[in-house]
Image (cartoon, rainbow, N blue to C red; front, side, top):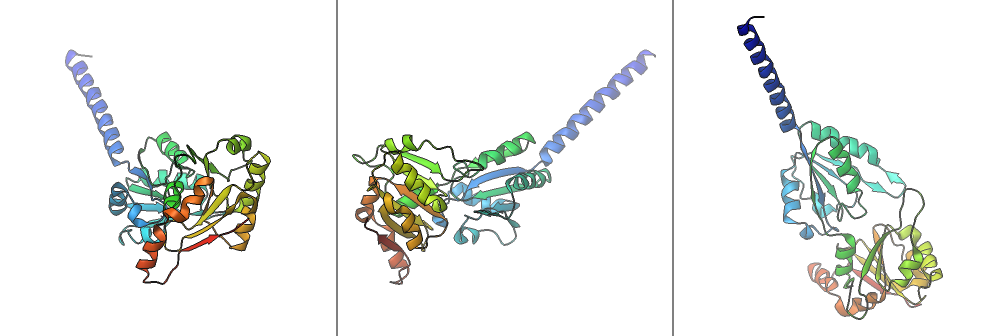
Length: 293
């Protein structure tokens, strides 16, 4: 091979490498992006500015059951929205398929708003979805949302911590893929406010386990149904009658369970009830019930 041919061959190889790199760069540019967005506990006014910006600018919105009607009303009419909600024993789309859809749509170059109730990283399986996307080298950002424990307790006038009553707060899920692995004795002895997510159907078990582990049977409890909405209901009692409260008041999901002395502050710190009453011009929807042991 002549010197000129060698030079031309090297130049051609270099150009091929450049072309390959350019194609890879273009392919990477064409990949979409997923924004995992926490929608908060229901009140659209509690959305973060960043969450609202993403909702209004995304190419596709994929949302869960706990995204409220008020928040869904903010979806642009021109933006496709896909519902992938889950309820107890009733999944419209299972988690593995949701992961696949996110990857498939992102690879089409779309900016996806993956909208989850509360905060996606608190019992929301957001971590699983981010791991799935990262395995495919898809760009991801996570936008925190106000979790139900904070939003619903605040709207019920119950501080999660309060000097002299509770120096800490523990979030617990009563739902698991297989068996629950909860240190009940540890929870009972913490002297913290306990917040149970997805615990409505396990109310009897929660009460029994905590009392067997040493929690006083007169410990105050609160159940907050559809918190941070005009339909919010607050039912209070003691841990010994937790299961009875669920049945008597026909509570439905989503309902948050709070356990601890801070529950007793709800009447003194109540504020949302009066706002709802004013907004509805006296047509009260907010309900607060005190149940004695």
